[in-house]
Figure 1 (cartoon, chains in turn cyan, green):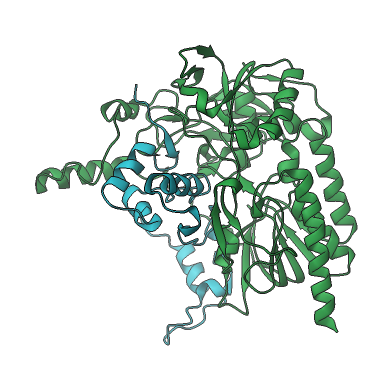
Figure 2 (cartoon, rainbow over the protein chains, first blue to last red; figure 1 turned 180 degrees about the vertical axis):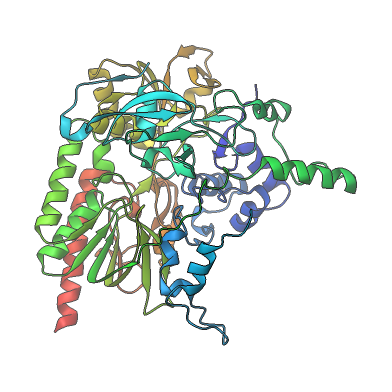
Length: 118
Length: 437
């Protein structure tokens, strides 16, 4: 049986994967995230970011204070999109000049009435 | 292995039965599906994404990805955040035919030494395309919901002087302080029950949590349990925090923000640290103190020396409840044994211990995602367990009108976190008073 030391359980990223990644020259935490996939699962780094960052400091010899976390993006926890569908802000795109405010959710009602075939 | 202990009825709720992977599990209305499944002896709740390794609950706080299940046709729900209700149907996902016996678990053996997906099947274009097709079939989390969601509840709106994020000892104390000073205060907490890490404290913890909750409510703070912060949008209406419960979303506008999100329970880096039955010591403490569930009879507690003193109280409580507990320093451990459930721990000196539960006691990692979205500085600090929120003596972060208190600023434990919350809450009340003059 494999002796896997799992750092990121969501994406099955092991300590061995991190060592391999560092050996390939990826030492920045954003690079490590993209190379190994750590922090991209349902927990979004809650279980693995600190563990990987501390291991990275150990393996590269970098001072911990020089290591920054990866960017925190919404949502902070798994959220059903239906909860946001009724919010007018969810239908507004400030950068789009052609956008018409669908604050009454007509488009949404139409979509709900005729769900696309999956 | 696991057994229930006598517990005050209000903590436990009413007896009920739910279906977990086709088997009937007896639980209580106040407790989570994950806790009920564990109490009935079910360890394996899911399979991991890549190697299809068996997985079970770890944190019991809705923060890890260990217990994702399909509940009444809705995929990817955290079994530790879904409460038992009569007739609830809980199914495993990402496993064939079941989480206990998953044929895809063979991947773990084929790639015993790990899998470098960057170089896998890249030798020939045809082979690569074929492999991509197979992998796409196997990957992804769960299957689509059984029905299209039609309920789109209106989004609630809260305009307050102070928003406190996190309802543990620090957040409840901070909310009590600001509300008592006359500031309109809303407190958000993502857990099933308010109280945070207090609820994992042996014996007196749940009562202390209830007292802190009553004090904050009596002071006039609006408490929103089961409502987590999910995003902060600085560009929207001077800054808006989006929060969500299972039922509805809420936009929160506040003059001051207090982050009291505490820390996430962490694992320790030993081989097979992901096996079902490897559980955070704080979750084991929570099961005992708040659920009346003794999660194992023979327990190996693997301890990071930084939290040994704090871990001891939980270890003592487990022993008092009848468990046999071996306390091991993480440096003593060679590997965890077992596959679908832990069977023991091998030590580097050659000794082999048998157990039915491994409890991991590590420094919690400060929960700084939210404050990071508000632009607050954090620093990686090994003594703090991760990226701690940087605050000055008064609790101010690097961002204006944003404050921090408790374990999110580095681990200090429930008692000190409560004192910290009260102190920072008073500072925020003072800042609000100064603004008013």
